[in-house]
Image (cartoon, rainbow, N blue to C red; front, side):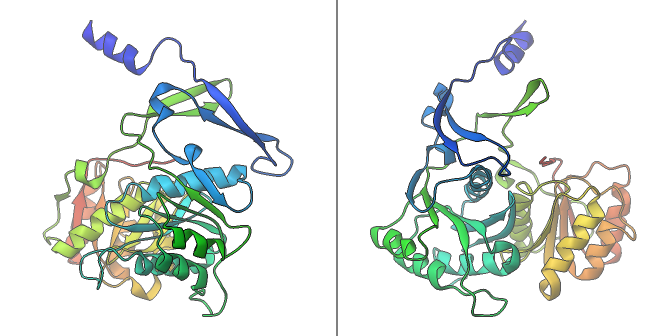
Length: 346
């Protein structure tokens, strides 16, 4: 019946993806691996934008890893509504910040860029910088001249800058940063109805893109303490970030900027500890997001965050020990919210 027809729409008995060779690459993830770059010629992807359809204005040729990291950075930054900068290293966002109301100029990306670098300057060095607004001359000067917050002297080095556009002076100024800096212009990838494929030995697995954003989700307060308006905004910001971090994923944020994140750890508490360590002395009054529920609370992820100075936490909920997380947050006067949505990323 109708249900069977619907499942066939989502999973046709046969699937062909027309791919066209753009060029071979110097090598794959490592120098001993051969590699090539293809574009998807299917109708659904033809005018859908994205990194594969980008224009390169400057710099060295793109490598295999550049494509992976660049796609991760641009996918993340295009999820944000406010003017935002995302910095990625090894496909994980290590710096994220949004310009917002309350700044002298809520559209000024220079401060967002500085905050994104400051989140983790060591990781940002040699990373990919992505913006969701055109790069102006003022922003390009900031990228070119900004020194590492670690010593105030070292110029920041990047592999790629990606944006939806550049002013003439902006592009000219950015080209002056380095001969090798790859400068890409790309339209946001429209993946609202798109699907992604991953290859496994002898086959492929296919799924819808994870397109859910905070606007599509209900944030339910389950603690006695209610989050402030600012905390709720920060929780949504942290939630938007955590979706793009490899699981187990934890993000800590304040003032619409990422302070620290823990990624790719086989246990959640270790991701929490890494995020706390990165947030350092800025953690007091911050918020935390987790891509999946907390299996334990006491003397574990939730309590460690509360003790460190986090004041509001959001997770999907759904653990048999959810009540422990609620009791723990109530003990420390911390707001706890659930979303009933999980954002695993492998």
